[in-house]
Amino acid sequence: MVTPFAAIPGHGRFAYSGIARRPDYHWPQGKRLAVYIGFNLEHFAFGEGLGAGIGPASPQPDVLNYSWREYGNRVGAWRCLELFDQLSLPTGALVNTALMDHCPELLQAVLARGDELIGHGHSNAFRQSDLTEDQERQLLDGCRTRIAQWQGAVPAGWLSPWISESRSTPDLLAETGYSYSLNWCHDDQPTRMHTRSGQTLWSIPYPQELNDIPMIMGRHMDACAFADMVIDNFDEMLLQSLQQPLVMGIALHPYIVGQPYRLRHLRRALQHIARARDAGDIWFTTPGAICDHMLALNP
Image 1 (cartoon, rainbow, N blue to C red):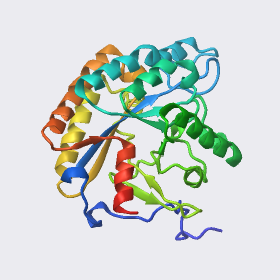
Image 2 (cartoon, rainbow, N blue to C red):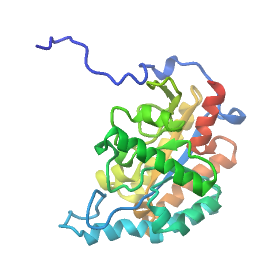
Image 3 (cartoon, helix red, strand yellow):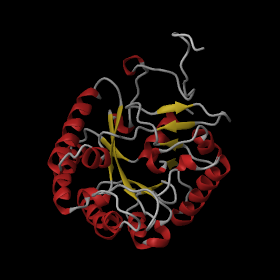
């Protein structure tokens, strides 16, 4: 029988740390707020598996929801890249390796911009947590190898499809050569995670609020309100960063924000942030560069 005050299970990956009680540091050139775009480029199986939906799920093949998601690869991603080019904004591109066979020209366009490629599984039709440990290791190794073949360097970071982890995922990430994970949304600063091998794995903040899937698809927020939310969050974090260095990520999926009327409002939000970048107030960067900075501060 469990007593009322028995210790509850914990993850053991990091200890509690209140943000107001931590050592101070700076981002490059003395900046206090690091901002990045997590640009999710995903591919989904036809006739099976998981996927966000614009309408009620239908018996497979679910043409409505599949084709709506595919709009992101065919149209939405290209419109987003045009916007990022106009504002000279880098991205951390979270890529399913299935795209290398499905639409290689899209990934080539991302690489041509110099964006960071981040592992995001083979397809977002399947959850990583459903795999055995051996299968999960094969997934991490395989995605790392394929991305390295594309960009000429191994990827430093990983975001699990559907943010799905097993008990061993952080350990396996460190053991297969990844430097950071984007799976955890527990903080506004990077956190060093414990792994069974003792190898370093950083948790870089990845947003579940400034994220178009939970906000627009989950909470049914319209594009205008989502853009206002991005701007308000940025302005508040810029103020808060006077006290501590902070990280603000913006998670975008082109089948959602690449729709023209939503892109119009995203443009307004990113223009607001780009003006602060041009004024020298922030470090607009990528998750990998944030991880590199933390490794330099904490070798």
